[in-house]
Length: 311
Length: 311
Image (cartoon, rainbow over all chains, first blue to last red; front, side, top):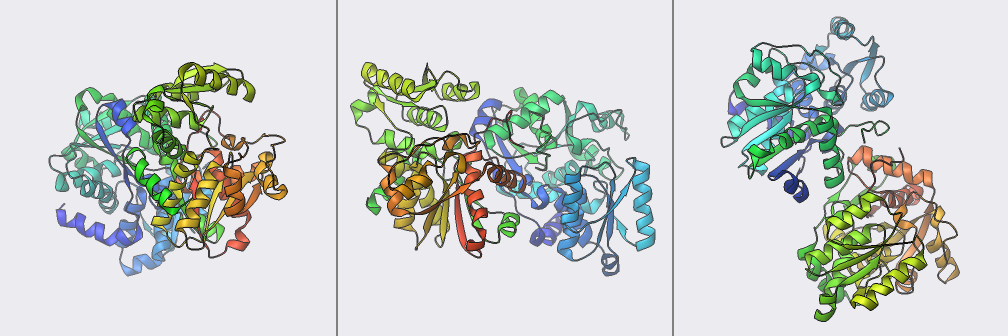
């Protein structure tokens, strides 16, 4: 992957995304003993970095593909991202969601004109429903994390962060399906000055940690984590990038995630989802080794169910 | 009050406060049918606009007064504001708090080195305890809202907002003790272009609404509102300013406050306290008359108890 690809990608999607702010908190810096720059993708359109990858993937389609639309299966942020990106670009989006998806998430997709197909809450049922739409409508399937155009789109968050703060020693991201950390690692490799990328992952969904140890893609044994965006597993496109460019992955407990989330909410007065707090929890877990370093954190998103908070 | 006083005040306190951001939300603009600029004092130091008034009032003291320190009685943001402002300026702060004040608020004051005196939870007990400190320590009492230096300090939030957005037709603020809206009205008078100031007030604590009608300061009959910062009443210094410069006051229900608060949290991904949502609730209540107007809202603060949310 060439540096130019990343430049081109950012230029392509720029009109359709927000350049989100980079925030700091003196209080959190004091608590952690280091300097942290938060790239606030919770302020991104539809509330998460996924808008970047979805927009890039859709824009890379040919004219005929665009006309027939796109399809994905997701109950979370990627469903909203594909719906809104497709709407912005004037093409149809078909979203397969499990029938037990919260009403708030179904409404969000519907608000962005996503055409919803409900299915059983198994991966198999989702894949079948999506495949059926591919066949019947001729729509193009877009994977939420294991797609090179999605990964490149996601990389633009770290590119903007490094434009704002060129001298970062580390960037931390959460690790779920691997699309954010793979893109971030490519951006840090091409645009950082020896900037290392570290992932934070819940102990309860530690597939990426174990995959890096074993050298092959491992499945999650459970996914019983509050960080609902991180319950998915790595894919064959992002895993080699992670192997090559990511420094390491740090596991954090559920308690550490909630503590970090509360710290951000109370001290920074911004709403971040539990998955975002995983990255700060990882920084706090490593704080002895990070004293006086300059650290970036990608705040992945801010879509939470206010009726169901962990405080 | 001359324009120059406001300039001087802003210049005086500038090194000790944050110039907070002005944010907008396309989604909220669409919902309300108007263009709203939120001046985000939830990102102010200690989390509320009160930092501005407290800082100015303390800086206006003489050297001997400064040495002996300041005292206030408050269970809320002003206690934290006086503590932090005094700490920044290197002088002692004595804070009288009711013994039933939440631990989180006592801890916040203690974190800023405020010296806490607990008393019974009545206004009389608070005033007596504060008076005792004035007599024993020679400390200067600072009122949270009925003090001209506090009012001028508060005015600087609207001054910054009007510097960023000079063509506002209206600025909305919440109304509690009257110190924020009085300062905002002075700022709009001197720095706006025919910019009108409107207050939002809970129906459950409607003293300012009734005071403007009767022409004299009325007491609250109840103060059973979620907007805990707005349970106080107007004073003889801010009331004449409000009478002269404030366009009107709009009453909002508890349900309207919670709806507006949820809208800000969900759509803007920022944490605001219920009192701040009162101003947006008032805008929504008047939206028919406000179509296509340019509106500023002072988001008063973001200090909430995450264990006790109204969602």
